[in-house]
Image 1 (tube, rainbow, N blue to C red):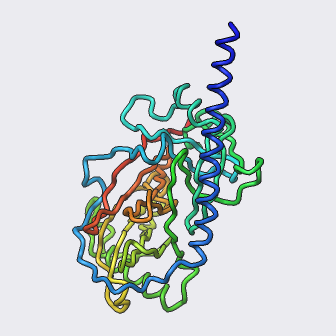
Image 2: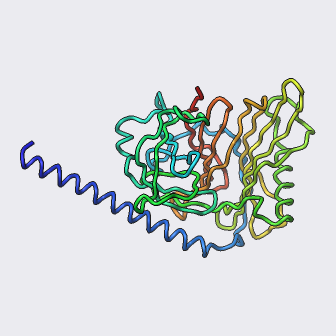
Image 3: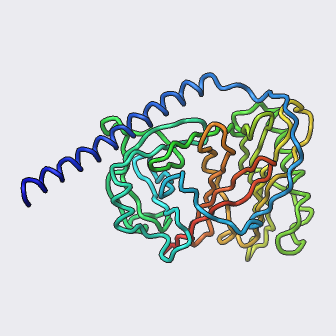
Length: 332
């Protein structure tokens, strides 16, 4: 290589390093400011009225496109905070659970915003491939796992749920039913049970009349003057040879200034099947791309023989629609 070419290569490398350092500094500042905002976050007490939303069932939207503002991939926390499952954002191509060499180069050593179900924000750096397509993964997710460290000198990361590479995504705080008062918990559980009872059956009426159990429930601020909840419910048919389950996810909203009012259904997703194969849904996090953007819910979908991920986003009218879903990562 000539001296001129060597000098040009060094200049290009320095420029790349400077850009990445600038991004790290920006994201660390974002995380710090997020902590300040977290301490000063207002209660859900706005008086803006809520219009009833059109109900959006799962799969009602044909558009499932990845938002490029979120970066090239979705990161999902592994068994520990130092491992990240890498899910490709472009779900339309073949071999959607495999990173290309160019994508791997693009995300390596690049800052990623890591958020939790609360309002925690951290900045991590993807280091290297830990395993390829679930080779050492007992959970069998089907995507490659990368090692990830804190942005500040490889600091240890705290727990997180999902992450976005090279993006400035902000978390929306979610309060679990366990953190609420007994009165609020009972009232919210009754509200989501009422909504689940009003939904059409997924495959016949064999579950009609059976009691629901609320397995998880989260309360959040969906927008100015809008209180939201997302909940998972289950009911069983306890057949000895082949126990069956029905699993239902609901998102509902109400005017946050009128806490005595019932919630209005905004989205639902329901499935039925055997206990081993029925689809279950895990609420991973709630986030938005800017302070004024509509929130998006990140879900994990477990099919028993594999995993998939989806984003359910709110629009200004109060509808929640599935905007993106990943391919299904198969177990071996």
